[in-house]
Image (cartoon, rainbow, N blue to C red; front, top):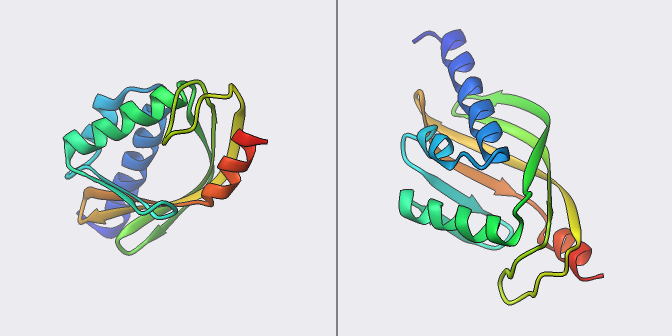
Length: 138
């Protein structure tokens, strides 16, 4: 696959990945990975492998059933696609000992979608957890 085709292929995977998360079609989301792995830098969590990633989806979407993303920008690197996006949701279920408050959050984030050739092998997400926590507890 030449460089232009690889870039187009990777971007299509990232867009399908993000769109499937928005509609909670996690079979499609899992299918975008060559190996499912999420690294959440703000809280040090790593969800490695299909079972761990599915549990991550179950936990977060139980807490935020309307969780969704809004893409702001997308850039390409040698081994990654980098996206900036808004993450939004309403706290309707327990999360990490915090009772649901029914409050909404909006947090700007950056994710590095890491590729090994044509295969997505990791989504590494950077965000400020205090931004979310403040909105849920104020």
